[in-house]
Amino acid sequence: MNERLLRQGFLGLFLLSLLVILLVQWLWPDTETNENRPLASFPEQPVTIDQWAEFRASFESYMDDNFGFRRGLQRTFHRLIVATGTSPLENILLGHDGWLFTAHRSLTDQHRGAMPLDPGTLDSYVDAFRQQRRWVEGQGARHFLMPLPDKNTIYPEYLPEWARPVQPGRFAQLQDALTEAGEPFVDSLLNLSEAKERGEWIYWQTDTHWNCLGAYHAYQALMDQVQSTGVPYRKRITNRELGLEARPPSVGGDMSQMLIMEDILLERRDVSCRLVFQDSLSFSAERLKDGAIHRNFIARPKNEVWRYRQDVPIVESKALLFRDSFAHLLLPYLVKSFDELVVAPHGELEFDEQLVLEHQPDLVIYQFVERDLIVRPERDQLAAPVVKVAETTVNKNQ
Image (tube, rainbow, N blue to C red; front, side):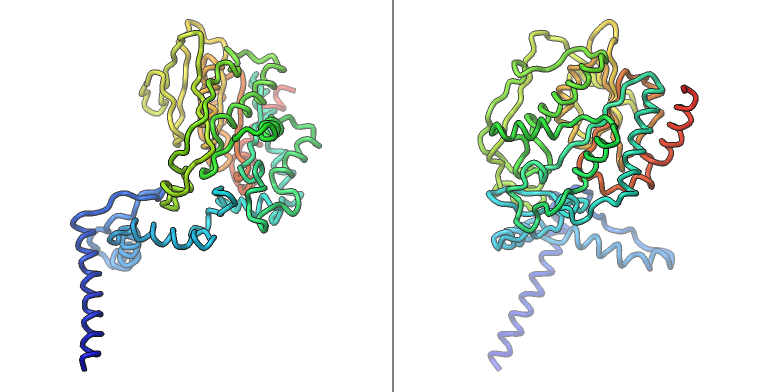
């Protein structure tokens, strides 16, 4: 009898604890989150039959995102799973020696050669980039295709054995196909590989991106081509102006933060780049959607178009950059390299020809990163609307 009462007492205490957790959450909500998205909000009171049908799913989403002490419980769970050598999140891969790798967009399989591009899709990429370049050149500008390698390609030795390449991945396939077709592109992989061989740390251990030194070497590969084509530019950043400094161990990057272990999985190999110039020329940053202007400010990557303009009386060099989040650390170099720089996100490998027509740049830089090759070119603007516009424009100029 006493044993039965004891069990019932423990069960009652457990249920009461759950109710207290819910009450605490609703009265004092924990707004801190490691998610790169807004948490689900409490659904509105349903009125119609359709709203009642949707209420259950909406309420479950709210509870999944907002249950009491969610972050603390998640953190404890993640620490236990990571201690076993396994990642609790399917889009993060645990490497050796504290390295984390993103598996977003099936990058692991893309890189190791487990999901190669079929010949038809590979040809579609090459044809789309070719016609994109021809259309840009038809507008009187130069086109610079800038594919960038993910960390998996630069540091494969820190990947788990099973995740290392078994045959050429999609990035290698595309570079080989572009080279075979005679289609020009900025080979940043060469510069980055040489920097790594010199012992430089060019990508963050715990983040999905490179650091400022990696961005600098890719920038140099781009400027090599810009100089060779005679396209106007304001200046080229050199080693003397880089202001490179080693940084002490710091809070982990975006993948550490997603694991809620940024104070445990630290960034131990990092550098800072503090650009030092002899001139004191400043610049303005304009957000084109509303005309908001900031002085000497570089915006974080968002789905917005920004224009950066040096304080010069006459604009003699204009560039347009289509980019993803990797371009953020390129911007300090590019902003100082051209009198005017327009920066636009390309989303799902899209290309907005209207931006070219509107801003009339001297050069167009189309930058993307290895993991973007999961996007099929025949289903987005890279190979559909752009190809049609390119074909028409090129024919008019031939």
